[in-house]
Image (cartoon, rainbow, N blue to C red; front, top):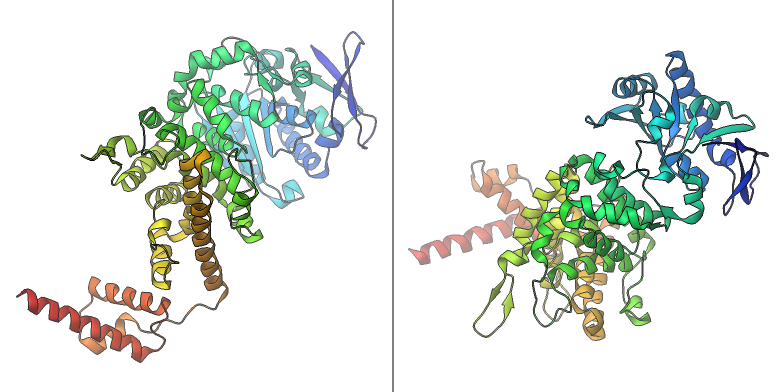
Length: 539
C-alpha cells in the first residue's frame, strides 16, 4: 500500500495526516513535529540532496528505507540512514565513500550491506557524523520491503522525492508499519524474516525496549524458536547490537528477557555455566542472576535507572559529579562509551566463578583466582565478537581488578602509595573499576544491604576519586632522575633493573616521600644496600 504524506509547512504539528490511494484519511499520533520537519532539516536536506545528485547522476534508483523513516515518524533523532539501491550495493557504497570523502566499511558480505561513515562538515553542514548503510534490491521496492524484518522497518521513501522536499511525499507501506507504530507493536513481515538474517532476532528485542513497544506473540515465539541462529551471525554485527542493547537504561529487565528468549547465552555461551551456581551466604543471588543484577546496579549508580532495594540514604552516599558524568559518557570506540563498557564488564565480571569454585572443609565457598581467569575469558569473548582492541583491554582490565578497590586498605582509607599502585595497575580503567566495585556490592547484598558497610565502601571510593581528581588538576610532577642518572651514579648496564628502580622512585615520589634528585639517588642507594644485605644473609 502507498500513502501520500501531506506537509502543511515547516512548523510543528500534533499529528501527521496520511492519505492512501483510495483517498481515505488516517492519523499517526505524535508528540510533536511532522515528517517534513524531521527529514528536511538543513543538514539532512543537504546530505540527501547531494546523495540524490550523485546517485541519479549514476542512474541509480534509491530509496530511504527502514529505521530512518520509522524514527522520523516517531520524532526520534537518528544518525543512521538505510538506503536501498537498484544495483551492486557494495560497489555503490564504496564509490559514495570515495566521492564524499567518507569511510567505507564492509558490514555484511553475505547480505551485501556496505556502510559509509561520513563526518565531512561540507557534506553535512552541521559537521555531525552519519552512518549510511547501502543494500541492494531487484525488482520493485515493495519486493525489497517484503524481505525486511519488522513492519515498522518495512517502509520506504524515494530518495529523489525526499531530496526535492515537495508538498506531497509518497511513503511506501505495504505491510501496515504505520498502524503498528500507532499500536506500539513489533511485528514480523513474514515467518522467514528472522531466520533469513538472524541478527534480526536481537534487533527485534532491542527495538521493543528502545521504543517502549511490545513484541507481538508471533514475533516472540519466532525469536525463541530461532534464538540459536544468533551464534552464526558475524561478530561485528553482534557487537553492534549488543552495544545498543547495553546502552538502553534499566537493562536488567531486558537482559532477563534476552535470556528467557534464549538469546543471551547464544551470544555469550560462557554465561550459561553461571546458572544455578550458588554463592556464599553474603550473596542474595546465584552467580548468573548476580551478574545481570550488577548491570542494573551500574545504571542506578550512573543515574540511568532505579534500584529496587535502595532508599534515599543509599543514593545519597554514592559519589557523583559533572566530571564523572562526562567521564562515563566519553566515547571509547565507534558505538561505545565508558558507561556501556562498564555495563559489559558488569555482565562478564564473574565468568570464571563456576570453574574456580571450591568448598572448604568448614563449608566456606571460595572462588580463588576468578577475577584474573575471568579477564582472560572476557578478552576471548570480546575478540570473538570483534570488539576493538581498546574496548577489549578496558573491559578485561575492569574484570581482572574488580576486587581491587576493597583490597586497598583494611578499616582505614588507603595510603597515597596504595592509591598510586592502584591507578598504575588499572591504567585508564581505574575510575570505572571503582564504580564496578560499588555495583558488585549492591548486587551481592540485594535487599540485605547493610547501610553502614555501604557507607564505608562509598567513602573509600569517594576518597580515592577525590585524590585522583586532585592529582589530575595539579601540574605533573617533574621526573626526579632518569635511567642515565642511574647508569652514571651506580655503574649500571642497561636492562630491566633500571626500569624497576625508576618505578620504585616514582612510587615513593607519589607517596610524598621524595621531592629532589638527591633524595631519589639516596633512596635508590638504600634499596640497593638492603637488597645486597638480604642476598648476603641468604648465602
